[in-house]
Image 1: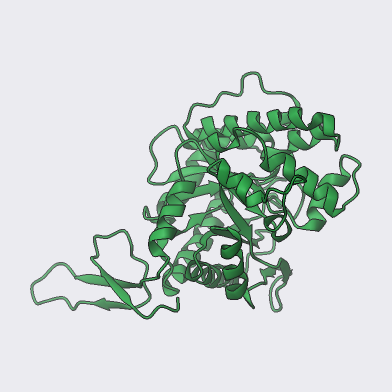
Image 2 (image 1 turned 90 degrees about the vertical axis):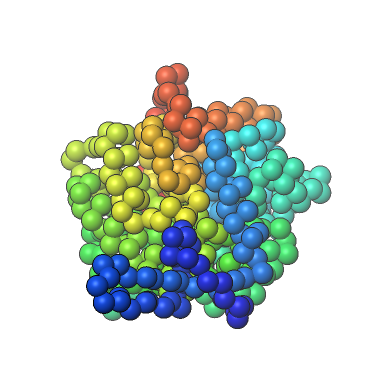
Length: 391
Protein backbone atom coordinates (compact mmCIF):
# COMPACT_ATOMS: atom_id res chain seq x y z
CA UNK A 1 0.00 0.00 0.00
CA UNK A 2 1.07 3.59 -0.50
CA UNK A 3 1.06 4.62 3.16
CA UNK A 4 4.58 4.84 4.55
CA UNK A 5 3.80 4.25 8.22
CA UNK A 6 4.32 0.86 9.80
CA UNK A 7 2.71 -0.94 12.74
CA UNK A 8 4.78 -3.52 14.63
CA UNK A 9 2.83 -6.61 15.72
CA UNK A 10 3.75 -9.23 18.28
CA UNK A 11 4.31 -12.69 16.81
CA UNK A 12 1.36 -13.96 18.87
CA UNK A 13 -0.91 -11.63 16.93
CA UNK A 14 -3.04 -13.10 14.19
CA UNK A 15 -1.92 -10.33 11.82
CA UNK A 16 1.14 -12.09 10.38
CA UNK A 17 0.69 -10.14 7.15
CA UNK A 18 3.80 -8.16 6.38
CA UNK A 19 6.55 -8.41 3.83
CA UNK A 20 8.96 -6.46 6.00
CA UNK A 21 10.09 -8.72 8.83
CA UNK A 22 12.95 -9.18 11.26
CA UNK A 23 14.00 -12.59 12.48
CA UNK A 24 15.78 -12.66 15.80
CA UNK A 25 18.87 -14.80 16.06
CA UNK A 26 18.71 -17.80 18.38
CA UNK A 27 20.72 -17.17 21.51
CA UNK A 28 23.16 -19.83 22.77
CA UNK A 29 21.32 -22.56 24.62
CA UNK A 30 17.93 -21.26 23.57
CA UNK A 31 15.39 -23.66 22.05
CA UNK A 32 13.13 -20.97 20.58
CA UNK A 33 13.49 -18.25 18.00
CA UNK A 34 11.85 -14.85 18.41
CA UNK A 35 10.07 -13.60 15.31
CA UNK A 36 8.36 -10.28 14.60
CA UNK A 37 6.43 -9.04 11.62
CA UNK A 38 5.40 -5.60 10.40
CA UNK A 39 2.45 -4.56 8.31
CA UNK A 40 1.78 -1.26 6.61
CA UNK A 41 -0.93 0.82 8.22
CA UNK A 42 -3.59 2.29 5.95
CA UNK A 43 -6.01 5.09 6.66
CA UNK A 44 -8.74 2.59 5.75
CA UNK A 45 -7.58 -0.29 7.95
CA UNK A 46 -10.18 0.07 10.70
CA UNK A 47 -12.96 0.51 8.15
CA UNK A 48 -11.80 -2.54 6.18
CA UNK A 49 -11.88 -4.71 9.29
CA UNK A 50 -15.32 -3.44 10.25
CA UNK A 51 -16.70 -4.02 6.75
CA UNK A 52 -15.32 -7.55 6.59
CA UNK A 53 -16.86 -8.35 9.98
CA UNK A 54 -20.22 -6.94 8.89
CA UNK A 55 -20.28 -9.10 5.77
CA UNK A 56 -19.20 -12.13 7.81
CA UNK A 57 -22.09 -11.76 10.26
CA UNK A 58 -23.95 -14.83 11.61
CA UNK A 59 -26.64 -16.29 9.38
CA UNK A 60 -25.81 -14.09 6.40
CA UNK A 61 -23.88 -14.40 3.16
CA UNK A 62 -23.32 -12.77 -0.23
CA UNK A 63 -25.61 -12.52 -3.25
CA UNK A 64 -23.39 -12.51 -6.36
CA UNK A 65 -25.03 -10.68 -9.26
CA UNK A 66 -21.85 -9.42 -10.92
CA UNK A 67 -22.27 -11.33 -14.17
CA UNK A 68 -20.90 -9.47 -17.18
CA UNK A 69 -23.42 -8.12 -19.65
CA UNK A 70 -22.67 -11.07 -21.94
CA UNK A 71 -23.22 -13.65 -19.18
CA UNK A 72 -26.33 -11.89 -17.94
CA UNK A 73 -27.57 -11.99 -21.51
CA UNK A 74 -27.30 -15.78 -21.50
CA UNK A 75 -29.40 -15.90 -18.34
CA UNK A 76 -32.02 -13.65 -19.89
CA UNK A 77 -32.01 -15.67 -23.10
CA UNK A 78 -32.92 -18.78 -21.09
CA UNK A 79 -36.31 -17.18 -20.38
CA UNK A 80 -36.73 -15.64 -23.84
CA UNK A 81 -35.60 -12.06 -23.11
CA UNK A 82 -33.27 -9.91 -25.21
CA UNK A 83 -29.99 -8.77 -23.69
CA UNK A 84 -30.79 -5.06 -23.28
CA UNK A 85 -29.89 -2.65 -20.50
CA UNK A 86 -33.58 -2.26 -19.72
CA UNK A 87 -34.02 -6.00 -19.19
CA UNK A 88 -30.82 -6.29 -17.16
CA UNK A 89 -31.94 -3.40 -14.99
CA UNK A 90 -35.40 -4.93 -14.50
CA UNK A 91 -33.95 -8.25 -13.37
CA UNK A 92 -31.42 -6.71 -11.01
CA UNK A 93 -34.07 -4.38 -9.62
CA UNK A 94 -36.17 -7.44 -8.81
CA UNK A 95 -33.27 -8.89 -6.84
CA UNK A 96 -32.01 -5.77 -5.09
CA UNK A 97 -35.41 -4.48 -3.96
CA UNK A 98 -36.61 -7.75 -2.41
CA UNK A 99 -38.17 -6.80 0.95
CA UNK A 100 -36.43 -8.40 3.93
CA UNK A 101 -33.41 -9.60 1.93
CA UNK A 102 -31.01 -8.11 4.47
CA UNK A 103 -32.06 -10.65 7.07
CA UNK A 104 -30.15 -13.31 5.13
CA UNK A 105 -27.81 -11.36 2.82
CA UNK A 106 -24.96 -9.18 4.11
CA UNK A 107 -23.32 -8.21 0.81
CA UNK A 108 -24.15 -8.02 -2.88
CA UNK A 109 -21.50 -8.12 -5.62
CA UNK A 110 -22.50 -5.89 -8.52
CA UNK A 111 -21.30 -5.47 -12.09
CA UNK A 112 -20.07 -1.95 -12.90
CA UNK A 113 -23.23 -1.15 -14.86
CA UNK A 114 -25.41 -2.05 -11.87
CA UNK A 115 -23.34 -0.05 -9.37
CA UNK A 116 -24.23 3.14 -11.22
CA UNK A 117 -27.86 2.25 -12.00
CA UNK A 118 -31.07 3.21 -10.23
CA UNK A 119 -34.54 1.72 -9.97
CA UNK A 120 -37.24 2.80 -12.38
CA UNK A 121 -38.49 5.25 -9.74
CA UNK A 122 -35.05 6.85 -9.32
CA UNK A 123 -33.57 5.18 -6.21
CA UNK A 124 -29.90 4.24 -6.53
CA UNK A 125 -29.34 0.51 -6.26
CA UNK A 126 -26.61 1.12 -3.66
CA UNK A 127 -29.17 2.95 -1.51
CA UNK A 128 -31.63 0.07 -1.85
CA UNK A 129 -28.93 -2.21 -0.46
CA UNK A 130 -27.95 0.11 2.36
CA UNK A 131 -31.58 0.35 3.47
CA UNK A 132 -31.46 -3.43 4.02
CA UNK A 133 -28.08 -3.26 5.80
CA UNK A 134 -26.47 -4.98 2.80
CA UNK A 135 -22.95 -3.89 1.83
CA UNK A 136 -22.54 -3.02 -1.88
CA UNK A 137 -19.63 -4.71 -3.65
CA UNK A 138 -18.14 -4.49 -7.13
CA UNK A 139 -16.48 -6.86 -9.61
CA UNK A 140 -13.19 -5.22 -10.61
CA UNK A 141 -11.38 -7.76 -12.81
CA UNK A 142 -11.51 -7.49 -16.60
CA UNK A 143 -11.89 -11.17 -17.36
CA UNK A 144 -9.74 -14.12 -18.36
CA UNK A 145 -7.36 -14.25 -21.31
CA UNK A 146 -4.92 -16.95 -22.52
CA UNK A 147 -1.69 -17.20 -20.51
CA UNK A 148 1.32 -17.36 -22.88
CA UNK A 149 3.79 -20.12 -22.07
CA UNK A 150 1.24 -22.19 -20.18
CA UNK A 151 -0.63 -25.42 -20.87
CA UNK A 152 -3.64 -23.71 -22.51
CA UNK A 153 -4.37 -21.95 -19.22
CA UNK A 154 -5.69 -18.47 -18.42
CA UNK A 155 -4.78 -15.42 -16.40
CA UNK A 156 -6.95 -12.59 -15.17
CA UNK A 157 -6.46 -9.06 -16.45
CA UNK A 158 -7.48 -5.76 -14.89
CA UNK A 159 -4.61 -4.40 -12.76
CA UNK A 160 -4.02 -1.47 -15.12
CA UNK A 161 -6.03 1.47 -13.84
CA UNK A 162 -7.39 -0.54 -10.90
CA UNK A 163 -6.44 2.07 -8.29
CA UNK A 164 -8.35 4.88 -9.99
CA UNK A 165 -11.33 2.66 -10.74
CA UNK A 166 -11.41 1.43 -7.14
CA UNK A 167 -11.40 5.00 -5.84
CA UNK A 168 -14.34 5.80 -8.11
CA UNK A 169 -16.24 2.69 -6.97
CA UNK A 170 -15.68 3.71 -3.34
CA UNK A 171 -17.15 7.16 -4.06
CA UNK A 172 -20.18 5.48 -5.62
CA UNK A 173 -20.78 3.48 -2.43
CA UNK A 174 -18.99 0.17 -2.97
CA UNK A 175 -17.17 -1.13 0.11
CA UNK A 176 -15.81 -4.46 -1.10
CA UNK A 177 -14.46 -5.87 -4.34
CA UNK A 178 -14.19 -9.16 -6.17
CA UNK A 179 -11.51 -10.50 -8.53
CA UNK A 180 -11.99 -13.96 -10.01
CA UNK A 181 -9.17 -15.98 -11.51
CA UNK A 182 -9.24 -19.69 -12.28
CA UNK A 183 -7.04 -22.78 -12.08
CA UNK A 184 -7.71 -25.83 -14.25
CA UNK A 185 -6.76 -29.29 -12.99
CA UNK A 186 -6.97 -31.04 -16.41
CA UNK A 187 -4.46 -28.46 -17.71
CA UNK A 188 -1.95 -29.26 -14.98
CA UNK A 189 -2.14 -26.84 -13.37
CA UNK A 190 1.26 -25.47 -14.34
CA UNK A 191 3.46 -23.72 -11.80
CA UNK A 192 3.28 -20.63 -14.03
CA UNK A 193 -0.53 -20.52 -13.92
CA UNK A 194 -0.65 -20.98 -10.15
CA UNK A 195 1.95 -18.27 -9.54
CA UNK A 196 0.25 -15.86 -11.94
CA UNK A 197 -3.12 -16.43 -10.26
CA UNK A 198 -1.68 -15.91 -6.78
CA UNK A 199 0.35 -12.83 -7.68
CA UNK A 200 -2.53 -11.19 -9.53
CA UNK A 201 -4.88 -11.77 -6.59
CA UNK A 202 -2.32 -10.33 -4.17
CA UNK A 203 -1.72 -7.17 -6.20
CA UNK A 204 -5.47 -6.66 -6.60
CA UNK A 205 -6.02 -7.18 -2.86
CA UNK A 206 -3.37 -4.62 -1.91
CA UNK A 207 -4.70 -2.04 -4.36
CA UNK A 208 -8.28 -2.60 -3.17
CA UNK A 209 -7.37 -2.14 0.49
CA UNK A 210 -5.41 0.99 -0.35
CA UNK A 211 -8.64 2.44 -1.76
CA UNK A 212 -11.02 1.37 1.00
CA UNK A 213 -12.42 -1.80 -0.56
CA UNK A 214 -12.37 -5.17 1.22
CA UNK A 215 -11.00 -7.59 -1.39
CA UNK A 216 -12.68 -10.94 -1.96
CA UNK A 217 -9.85 -13.30 -2.92
CA UNK A 218 -11.11 -15.90 -5.40
CA UNK A 219 -8.77 -18.40 -7.06
CA UNK A 220 -11.48 -20.69 -8.42
CA UNK A 221 -10.46 -24.28 -9.04
CA UNK A 222 -12.67 -25.33 -11.93
CA UNK A 223 -14.78 -28.47 -11.66
CA UNK A 224 -13.80 -29.64 -15.14
CA UNK A 225 -12.24 -33.10 -15.26
CA UNK A 226 -12.63 -36.68 -14.08
CA UNK A 227 -10.14 -36.45 -11.20
CA UNK A 228 -10.89 -37.78 -7.69
CA UNK A 229 -11.46 -35.56 -4.68
CA UNK A 230 -7.94 -36.23 -3.36
CA UNK A 231 -6.49 -34.60 -6.47
CA UNK A 232 -8.68 -31.53 -5.94
CA UNK A 233 -7.44 -31.30 -2.35
CA UNK A 234 -3.82 -31.53 -3.49
CA UNK A 235 -4.24 -28.73 -6.03
CA UNK A 236 -6.28 -26.55 -3.65
CA UNK A 237 -3.59 -26.75 -0.98
CA UNK A 238 -0.93 -25.81 -3.54
CA UNK A 239 -2.93 -22.85 -4.83
CA UNK A 240 -3.88 -21.44 -1.42
CA UNK A 241 -0.33 -21.79 -0.11
CA UNK A 242 0.87 -19.68 -3.02
CA UNK A 243 -1.95 -17.16 -2.60
CA UNK A 244 -1.26 -16.49 1.07
CA UNK A 245 2.48 -16.25 0.46
CA UNK A 246 1.96 -13.44 -2.04
CA UNK A 247 -0.76 -11.76 0.03
CA UNK A 248 1.81 -11.47 2.81
CA UNK A 249 4.48 -10.27 0.38
CA UNK A 250 2.11 -7.48 -0.66
CA UNK A 251 1.35 -6.38 2.90
CA UNK A 252 -2.32 -7.28 2.68
CA UNK A 253 -4.16 -7.05 6.02
CA UNK A 254 -5.73 -10.48 6.53
CA UNK A 255 -8.40 -9.16 8.89
CA UNK A 256 -9.62 -6.96 6.05
CA UNK A 257 -10.14 -9.61 3.34
CA UNK A 258 -12.68 -12.31 2.55
CA UNK A 259 -12.07 -15.56 0.68
CA UNK A 260 -14.25 -17.07 -2.03
CA UNK A 261 -12.93 -20.61 -2.59
CA UNK A 262 -14.35 -23.55 -4.46
CA UNK A 263 -15.51 -26.44 -2.30
CA UNK A 264 -13.20 -29.44 -2.52
CA UNK A 265 -15.15 -31.90 -4.69
CA UNK A 266 -14.33 -34.56 -7.29
CA UNK A 267 -14.14 -33.43 -10.91
CA UNK A 268 -17.54 -33.00 -12.54
CA UNK A 269 -16.93 -36.03 -14.79
CA UNK A 270 -15.63 -38.30 -12.02
CA UNK A 271 -17.57 -41.56 -11.75
CA UNK A 272 -18.08 -41.31 -7.98
CA UNK A 273 -19.97 -38.40 -6.45
CA UNK A 274 -19.08 -37.27 -2.95
CA UNK A 275 -21.56 -36.85 -0.10
CA UNK A 276 -21.96 -33.50 1.71
CA UNK A 277 -20.11 -34.95 4.72
CA UNK A 278 -17.17 -35.98 2.54
CA UNK A 279 -17.04 -32.62 0.78
CA UNK A 280 -17.18 -30.85 4.15
CA UNK A 281 -14.37 -33.02 5.53
CA UNK A 282 -12.03 -32.40 2.60
CA UNK A 283 -12.86 -28.72 2.30
CA UNK A 284 -12.37 -27.98 5.99
CA UNK A 285 -9.12 -29.97 5.94
CA UNK A 286 -7.82 -27.73 3.17
CA UNK A 287 -8.92 -24.54 4.94
CA UNK A 288 -7.41 -25.54 8.28
CA UNK A 289 -4.10 -26.34 6.61
CA UNK A 290 -3.88 -23.14 4.59
CA UNK A 291 -6.08 -20.28 5.89
CA UNK A 292 -5.03 -18.23 8.93
CA UNK A 293 -7.72 -17.67 11.58
CA UNK A 294 -7.20 -13.90 11.14
CA UNK A 295 -9.31 -14.10 7.97
CA UNK A 296 -12.87 -13.26 9.08
CA UNK A 297 -14.93 -15.01 6.40
CA UNK A 298 -14.92 -17.90 3.93
CA UNK A 299 -17.66 -17.22 1.39
CA UNK A 300 -17.97 -20.27 -0.87
CA UNK A 301 -18.93 -20.13 -4.53
CA UNK A 302 -21.58 -22.64 -5.56
CA UNK A 303 -19.53 -24.11 -8.39
CA UNK A 304 -22.31 -25.26 -10.71
CA UNK A 305 -23.93 -27.36 -7.99
CA UNK A 306 -27.70 -27.47 -7.72
CA UNK A 307 -29.30 -25.01 -5.33
CA UNK A 308 -29.97 -27.77 -2.83
CA UNK A 309 -26.55 -29.45 -3.14
CA UNK A 310 -24.70 -26.18 -2.55
CA UNK A 311 -26.82 -25.59 0.57
CA UNK A 312 -26.38 -29.13 1.88
CA UNK A 313 -22.60 -28.90 1.52
CA UNK A 314 -22.49 -25.56 3.32
CA UNK A 315 -24.66 -26.94 6.10
CA UNK A 316 -22.31 -29.93 6.54
CA UNK A 317 -19.35 -27.58 7.00
CA UNK A 318 -21.14 -25.78 9.83
CA UNK A 319 -21.90 -28.78 12.04
CA UNK A 320 -19.02 -27.88 14.33
CA UNK A 321 -17.32 -24.56 15.18
CA UNK A 322 -14.83 -23.14 12.66
CA UNK A 323 -12.09 -20.52 13.12
CA UNK A 324 -13.81 -18.39 10.47
CA UNK A 325 -17.32 -17.45 9.41
CA UNK A 326 -18.09 -20.17 6.83
CA UNK A 327 -20.81 -18.93 4.51
CA UNK A 328 -21.85 -18.43 0.88
CA UNK A 329 -21.32 -16.12 -2.08
CA UNK A 330 -23.71 -17.72 -4.54
CA UNK A 331 -24.88 -16.62 -7.96
CA UNK A 332 -26.86 -19.32 -9.74
CA UNK A 333 -27.50 -21.26 -6.51
CA UNK A 334 -29.54 -18.27 -5.36
CA UNK A 335 -30.90 -17.07 -8.70
CA UNK A 336 -31.83 -20.13 -10.75
CA UNK A 337 -35.36 -20.59 -9.40
CA UNK A 338 -35.84 -16.82 -9.21
CA UNK A 339 -35.17 -16.38 -12.92
CA UNK A 340 -37.49 -19.22 -13.93
CA UNK A 341 -40.23 -17.88 -11.68
CA UNK A 342 -39.94 -14.34 -13.05
CA UNK A 343 -39.95 -15.14 -16.79
CA UNK A 344 -39.60 -11.42 -17.49
CA UNK A 345 -43.20 -10.68 -16.51
CA UNK A 346 -44.05 -7.79 -14.14
CA UNK A 347 -46.88 -9.77 -12.56
CA UNK A 348 -44.33 -12.44 -11.47
CA UNK A 349 -41.97 -10.09 -9.63
CA UNK A 350 -43.45 -10.68 -6.18
CA UNK A 351 -43.40 -14.46 -6.60
CA UNK A 352 -39.81 -14.33 -7.87
CA UNK A 353 -38.75 -12.23 -4.88
CA UNK A 354 -40.36 -14.74 -2.54
CA UNK A 355 -38.39 -17.53 -4.21
CA UNK A 356 -35.19 -15.53 -3.66
CA UNK A 357 -36.04 -15.23 0.03
CA UNK A 358 -36.62 -19.00 0.19
CA UNK A 359 -33.14 -19.70 -1.16
CA UNK A 360 -31.50 -16.97 0.91
CA UNK A 361 -33.14 -18.26 4.09
CA UNK A 362 -32.11 -21.85 3.29
CA UNK A 363 -28.47 -20.79 3.00
CA UNK A 364 -28.76 -18.62 6.10
CA UNK A 365 -29.83 -21.73 8.00
CA UNK A 366 -26.96 -23.67 6.42
CA UNK A 367 -24.50 -21.03 7.63
CA UNK A 368 -25.85 -21.69 11.11
CA UNK A 369 -25.76 -25.48 10.59
CA UNK A 370 -29.55 -25.82 10.86
CA UNK A 371 -30.67 -26.55 7.28
CA UNK A 372 -32.83 -29.48 6.17
CA UNK A 373 -33.62 -30.28 2.53
CA UNK A 374 -37.06 -31.54 3.44
CA UNK A 375 -39.71 -29.93 1.26
CA UNK A 376 -37.30 -28.59 -1.39
CA UNK A 377 -38.63 -28.47 -4.96
CA UNK A 378 -37.37 -30.70 -7.76
CA UNK A 379 -36.25 -27.60 -9.65
CA UNK A 380 -33.95 -26.62 -6.78
CA UNK A 381 -32.31 -30.06 -6.94
CA UNK A 382 -31.24 -29.77 -10.58
CA UNK A 383 -27.52 -29.27 -11.24
CA UNK A 384 -26.21 -26.22 -13.10
CA UNK A 385 -22.68 -27.24 -14.13
CA UNK A 386 -21.32 -25.59 -17.26
CA UNK A 387 -17.92 -26.79 -18.46
CA UNK A 388 -15.20 -24.19 -17.97
CA UNK A 389 -17.40 -21.96 -15.82
CA UNK A 390 -18.57 -22.96 -12.36
CA UNK A 391 -19.45 -19.51 -10.98
